[in-house]
Each structure stands twice: as C-alpha cells, then as structure tokens.
Length: 287
Image (cartoon, rainbow, N blue to C red; front, side, top):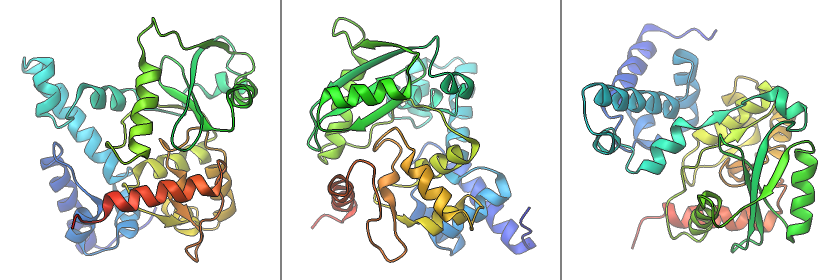
C-alpha cells in the first residue's frame, strides 16, 4: 500500500469531507484537484490509494447514503431523489443498477439462462445495436448494418435468449438509444444508464477508471495504467479498452496515445474523433 505523509493525509481527509458535505452538488475534477493543488489524474490516484475508491465513487456512496437516510426519515421518494442530488429518477435508477462485473460465470457460459433484449437504431455515428439484461446495458456497439451487429451480439452471448425490442413493452431501449444519440449530437447531457458489465478483474478496474473520467477529460494509456496501480501494464490496459463492449457509456474514446494521437478505437477513428470533438465543444466556455 502507498504510504502518505501526515500533511497529505490531512488534505485528503478534508477533501473527502468536502465531497461528503457536497454530495448533492456537481463536483468537477478541476474543483476537487484545485483543493489539494494537484493535477486531476494525480488527485484521483492519491484519493483512491487512501480511500480505496475514486472521488466519483465516494460521492456516489455519500449521495446514496443521504438518499437512504431521507427515506428512513419518512421523506417522499420523489422528494428524496431530488433532495439527495440525483436530479431525476433515471439517475438514481442508473446508479443503483450500476453493476460492474456481475455474474462473470454466466458470461463465460455464453449468457446461458439469460434473457437479453436488443434494439438497433440509426445515430449520427451510424447504426448502433444496444442490448440489455434485467440489470442494465451489456452491449452497445456501432457498425455498418443490423445484421453484422446482431452477429456480433450472438458471438458475445451465444447461449443467451435474445429477444428483439418490442415497442409494446416498457420502451427502455428505445429511450436509452435516443438519449445516447442526443448526447452524441451535443443536445443533452450524457445519459446515466444502468450497466451490466462482464470481464476479468483487470478489465473491470480499467472500465471503472474510464467511468470516473469527466466529460471532455482525456488521459494517455500510460496514465490509465498508473491510475489503476499497474504502471507497467500499458499494453494490457489498452487491450482492456479494446475489449469494452459498451460504446460511449464506458468512454474508452477518452484514452489517447502519449503523444496526443488518437490511438486505436474498435469502432473506428472517425467516430472517436467525432466523440472527442463534441465533448470539447461542450466543455468550451460559451462566448
């Protein structure tokens, strides 16, 4: 375990208290790193080495505890959602259903015994096929056409029961794809959707770090490896990005080469460039 001097520990304990006290507010990495006078990536590494979770996960836990306490105090569930800082019912649903690395045995078995619903829709970056279990999105990939994407879904979950989205059902996949497309077009915030991610322990660490990145934030592959305490595993970290099966929602497009080049992207560099350009436009101050 990394050892820290007393001054560093005191600064980060104060930072953790600040996050807990402001769990219902939007806290940017820039705001948090400025409080301890470190870069965003360094702040996240030190915070996680001390508390075992990222600042984002820490805030989510504090917000979730406030939500539960409000319910225990008898506050109406809708009021509790907004008072604890979620902003919408979909956000609290997304966080409580954020399943990282669920049932890996089921994944290794090709999804045997699972029901997976899928839908394919056009987006500004081409067709996307999104699929979900009861836990959340397990597959979201761009491609050239529906048939090729459906073949890829069957390859990932060969023994699962695949069902095409039924418009007479709850409509969640259609809404989720619309929300994702709206985000890509820079028309609305990044959707907080429930995820059902399956992978190795190493892959899960990489994906958790990707989920902690803020909109418009980019890091290099080496910075990614350092952030998960595996500084020599740069190639393995890059491979874990390539193994990501959930486009945009797990933002592997935010990882660049050390020289600032785009690097790789399983859904094509044109899409990666378009996503990064849209995020930079959102982050740029209005004139």
